[in-house]
Amino acid sequence: MIPAAKPIIGRAERRAVDRVLRSGGLAQGPQVAAFEKEFSSHVDGRHSIALNSGTSALHMAFIAAGIKPGDEVIVPSFTFAATANSVALAGATPVFVDVEEDYFNIDASKIEAAITKKTRAIMPVHLYGHPANMVAVTDIATRHGLLVFEDAAQAHGAKIKGVPVGAWSLAASFSFYPTKNMTSGEGGMVTTPSDEISRMVKILRNQGMEIRYQNEVVGFNTRMTDIHAAIGRVQLKKLPGWTSQRQKNAAFLNAHLEGVVTPPTAPGMEHVFHQYTIKIVDTDRDAFAAELTKRGVGNGVYYPTPIHRLPSFGLSLDLPSTERVAQQVISLPVHPALKKRDLETIVKVVNSVARAGS
Ligand SMILES: Cc1ncc(COP(=O)(O)O)c(C=O)c1O
Image (cartoon, rainbow, N blue to C red; front, top):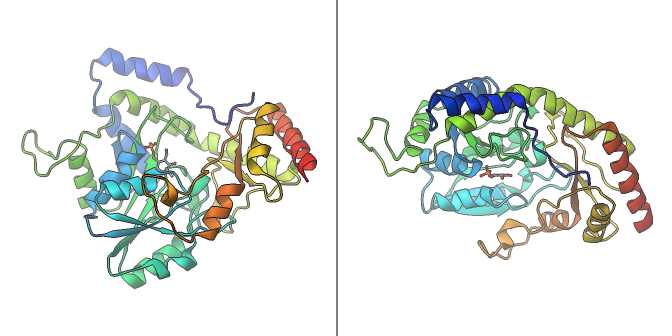
């Protein structure tokens, strides 16, 4: 079976963890500080604050920016639940807007209709590693006096007109979950140009304290450990090479797949292919996916249920593009551990299943 995703952990990661274990300093310390500094150089020098998960990064960023009960935050529904969970965890209300069907990101032309007196912010998701249309979102936010956040959990290293994601908003959040383009085991990072948000996220992750035992606000323990940061630092160095391998794998698949809709990249965007997601338009997607699995090609459906309809939100909304793509998408392996023969097998199997189904 060719796995759908594969974390790559090498000797350098193991040595880095061993050094931390031998040092005796396991909790947040010098490795976290170094990881933050190194991550900043990947987001145009913005502040970077490490957390224990991408969900915590989103959650702390919202609270630090003053998002509160009564506020509405505009998000897509075609994403992972953490996008909207974090809005709700900050006490605010997620307002779901439809996506466009080529790149699967929030449809900027539908945002203004969702703005109310309570709207405080817009948070696009750079889904699958393809940047959202931040130029259009920034323009809408500026005209309506709204804050902009980015859910960059899936898009380490992606760029818009040469500017990295994570550098387009008041606060962005990355995830280092094992299947992401780089991992720290579990972990997350907030990036922000704001000194005050940076300070508040640091305080919130540490029980509300900047000075020991002088808690300023009610906070959390959402700190990253030095063990995780040590892994993340090694992986960050490998990220550019892995990204270009993902892009080469995607180009190979784009050139050879037939009978399915391959993922396009919008002009001016750099797609980092966290997922390589095709659309199955004329045949049953679930049967197609089951056949791929049967023939040894790992795959995933991200995400089969739009999050507004999950029991946790339980909303009935009219989001036709979201509903359609949720029925059509299948993500194929694109990770940098794939060999040429794996890519050839994926092409052979997908093309043959597509031919049989049409
Ligand atoms: C779009 C999106 N947002 C948020 C998250 C949350 O990240 P984490 O799993 O690190 O909490 C993830 C990843 O799992 C994600 O894919």
